[in-house]
Length: 432
Image (cartoon, rainbow, N blue to C red; front, side):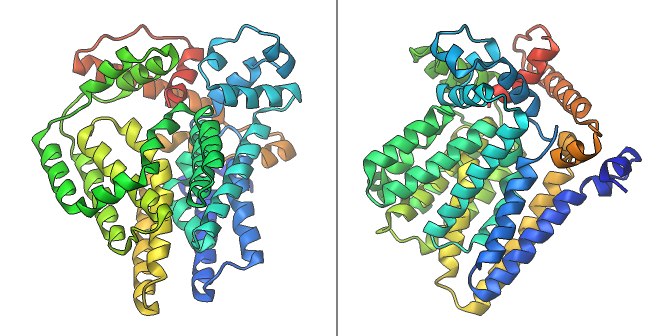
C-alpha cells in the first residue's frame, strides 16, 4: 500500500517512514565504516545516492518549493535575460548568479524537479569531497550531517545550501594556498546568496589564532554579556541605513523585521550553551599550525560570538550553523584520529545518541507539516497521485505569517497589510 494513501488515513508514523529509513541507512553505513575504519566504494555509492535522491526527487515537500516554483516560472530565458528583459519581483529579489541558473534551466524548459536534483547532486558531491579532503570518515560524517542539518539545509534553503558548498570549495583552495581560486569560489557563492559574506572573517586566520589563544576568557565575557541582556541587535537597522546598495540594505532590513523582539530568551541561552560547549570541547585538539583547522574552529567561535551579541536574531545563527555543523563534524573526526579505539567508540555512541535526539526533536516539531508525508516525484510520475503537499505548504505559510503578525503586534511595531497568496509564498524564503 502506498505511503501517501496511508498518510491520508492519519497514520503519522508512516508519514515519517522515508526519513526514518534514510536515518537508519546513514547510521548503519556509519557503523560499518567506523569498524572498517574507512568508507569503501560500494558504501560510498549507497550513501551518496541516498543523499541525492531524498532531496533531489522530493515532490512538493519542504519549506521552499513554492517560492522556487514561482521564481522558475517567472525567470526569463538566457536570451531574454541578456536582452535586458524586465524582471518580475520574485526573481528580481534573487542574487545574479542564482538568477543565471534559473534562466539556464528555463532556456531548456526544465521544471522545479530539475532544479532540486541539480542542487542535491552538486551539494552532495561537494560535501563528500570536503569530507575526503579533511580525512573525515564519509559515512560517519553524512550520518551526523543528516541528523543535524540535512532536512533544513538540503530541503529548505536552496540558495544558502549552494552558497555553503561554494564556501567549502573556497576553504579547500585557501588551505592549499590557492588564493585566487578561493576568491573565485567565494565570489560565486556570494552571488548565489549574499549572506555568504558573513563568513569572510574566518579567512583571517592570524586574527583567529590570537583570539583562540584567549578563548576561555572570551567565552566568559560573552556569557556575562548574554546574561546581562545587552544586545547589539539595534545596530542592524543602523548598518542597513548606511549601506549604499539598496538590495543588500533591503535584505538587512528584512532580516530585522523577521527577527523576534529584543530580550533574553531561554532557548537562545540553551543554544549558546550547546554551541559553546561543543566549541570548547573540540578546540582541545585544535592545531594552531593548521590553516584549515583555524578556519573551522574560527567559524565555531564566530557562531558563539553571534549568539551572545545578538541572541534575538536566529536568522543569523541559522546561516552560520549551516556551515558550522560541517566544521563540527570535521573537527570531531580529526579528534577521533588522535584517540584510542575504545574512547573513540564511546564518543561515537554519545554522538549517535545525541544525533538521534536532535533528529527526533526536529521531525516531531509541529512546523514540519510541509515535510510530512514525504512525497517523491518518482512516485508521482509513476502513479499520477499528487498528494496534498501544496495545501500543506499553503497552511504552513499562513501560520508563519500570522505568527509573525502577532509577534509584531506584541512588540509594538507596525503591521503591514496582509499580502496576496503570491506574497505569502514568497516572503519567508526570500528573507532567507
